[in-house]
Every structure is written in structure tokens, then in C-alpha cells.
Length: 334
Image (spheres, rainbow, N blue to C red):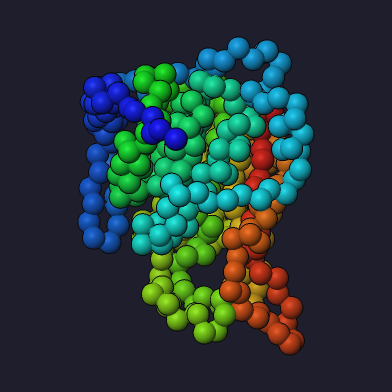
């Protein structure tokens, strides 16, 4: 099979235009970084981001996506088996807990049309923005960590699929509480993210779910926490975490179109022989700030788990949390 040639001049011109756009976005916030954490200093902004949020496809008005009936039925199954691909970054030195492109991609296909706007309030290394670019959707992502924003911009710049100026994917280094300063009300068709799972990473890693002979690896007894910023959700205990998350989504709610979906991928926490049902805390707090729970989907991760060790035998039965995660689907009611 012949390799498809890419118009070099067109690619360079696109890269130059995109760099100008990114430079403009970088001017929207001032970042001061020191070795231990990142402090964000707000800067007054004259206007919101210029980004399209209207659909560009020919789908009927009563359709919520571009899927046909066959694909719709396939997605009605509430247990999803997802895969990582070559473009996914699974190196914990780059990011300790990235989710696969296939997860936001499936959500974007389900809940948006081409050209519409997708938001990721905790974008990490830009997985949602990559999926949005693939599917010709506009997207904006936010993260407290400047390093992750830089990685996202690099990943987007390296993508071979170019849609010219038809869609934009913008990465911004700022607190998710400030999202309303960047986007207009009633413009977001989907918010999808995998936020930090409370303070799950904020401890020495013991690898207890792995076989005993494999536990002592390069990450053994290391703390893989994202940052020490007090606004980082990964520094908070489960209850405080759910409340802080809901506080952010309360500000996002007016930005969503009526009946726009809001998807949160999360897992429960097991610590000191006690299970903390983080997904339950999130559901309760999200309902308090105006969201309606529509679906609970299970991400079946058994295809990604191998070489697990025996856990709790013979006196304490504990299920392996690494074998599944929750995908909570809310929407903004009418």
C-alpha cells in the first residue's frame, strides 16, 4: 500500500497559523512556576475564546449525534471494553494515569455532532483534544499543570490528520473554576473528562494488586501525585474531593446547552482496608448543583489487566478495583 503524501506547504502553513493561535491563548493567563508547585495568577480578559460551537453536519435536528441505528444499538450496552492504541501515552513518567483515546472518542461520537464544542475541565495530556481532532469537533481543555499543557500542544502539533481551520483544539493552563471566563453560555455540547481520583496517587505506591515477584519495580514506594497545588483535586480526601468537583461543575452548568451531556470517568478508592465509594459521592454532589444522572456505564478493564496477585486470601475478600471503572453520564436538564 502506498503511503499517502502530505502537502508539505499546506502542513507548514497550518502549523504556522496554529502556533499563532496557541500564542494568543497563552497570553490569556500568567503562570509562575516553582519546583514544588504551580501558582496561577489571573489576568483580566477582554473577551471569551473565539471558537465554533454549531454543528457542521447535515444530520436532522432531532438527532443528538451522527451515528446510524446500528452504531446506536451497539452503544446501548452499558459495559464498555476499551483499548489503548499506539498514540496513547501510558508512560507513568509522562502522566501517572492517562485514559485511552477510545474513551472520550466514544463519548464524543455518542453526544455530539461534527463541528460542535467539547470541554475537558481536567485534560491532563490532552487525550480528549486528540479524540476531538480525530472526529472534527472543536474542543477546549484546561489543566493546572503547565507541563501537561505543553505535552498536549506537542501531541496536537504532531498529528498527521489536518482539517485546516475547520476545527480548533485549544489547551489552556488555568484552574477549572475559571472556565466561565473563557466560554459563552449555552455553547458546550459535551463535557468529558477523567479527573484525579481523589488522593489515590498521593501516597507511596505499593503495587498490591500485582504479583509479589513483580511489585518491586521502578515505581515501588514512589508518590506519583500530579502536584502539591492545594487546588489540585488529587490532594483532597474523597468527600472534600467530590464537593470541590461539584463546585467546578456548578460553574460549568450554564455553559452547557440544554440536555448537553457531562461525562466523568472515575474509580473508587481502597485504603486501609476500607472502600470509599467516590462515584456515589460524585453522583450526590452533582445532583445538588443541578445535574441529572442519566446513565452509569462500566468500563470493563479485564482485557488490560494481567499478572495480578492474590488479594486478601484467605480471610478478607476484596475485589480488584483495577478490573473496572465507572463512567458517569449526567446532563443539564431543560
